[in-house]
Image 1: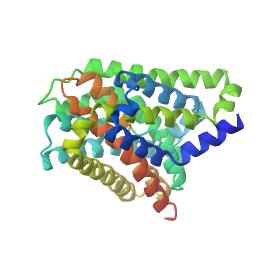
Image 2 (image 1 turned 135 degrees about the horizontal axis):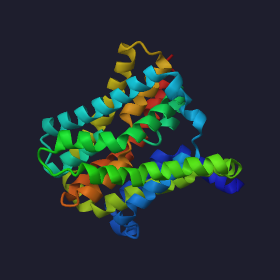
Image 3 (image 1 turned 90 degrees about the vertical axis):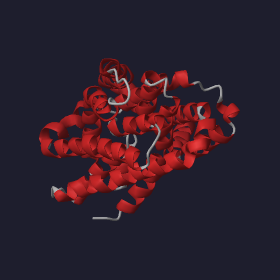
Length: 310
């Protein structure tokens, strides 16, 4: 168990580098990871969400009721800034329909699963970060389909009910199951806490590998363009999230949490939704995969930069 804990700690610490290395391998030598099929993406994302649920307790959501103003500010920022940025970037760069759908899906998804860790590293308000992640994830089955329809529905057929059910099955049910297991078998889950990062990192890496390998040829043809859009989307999310917090007179620790929650998206969910509901637009999975690689790198850098800001 001690060995697994050490490996898990290393996986969590160097997640960005691991994701980047595997993404590069999948891009340039796709056959090396071809055994990981894109059909596994939903299952892998469910594993990540179940692991997240195992770490949550009822007390983690206390902030929702004790500081509703902070949560409301954070979630409003989450579901306005990122969708609007996504839509704007698709127009500014004139993205083809496939890629535009993928970017919009990234923008309409809830906060990323690693945002809580990045907030901790940034010396931000971790309780607010956990509360925002939880609330935005619970709201996602309702808001993600609606926002996707608003920003992409004019050009593509968005089946909001099917998307709602997908998010419930892939996100809400696994997180709920994890919470229930943690509630009734807390001694067991406490023992697993130290190895959960290894499970989550492995699943995230596998998702990135599957999507990048399956689309390696297409990524090579539009790689620089989509990388530029993803980087701008993410960095502007950090900046605008922090600016909103400052404008509404939140303290610096809360501003850090809002910035990271807004900037880091659940891009694995975006990839899953693209593959499930937009199969006729094969490039739609690419923005989510690129975002998965990039935001883990930028999140670590941003957290390190913000750690000294008081």
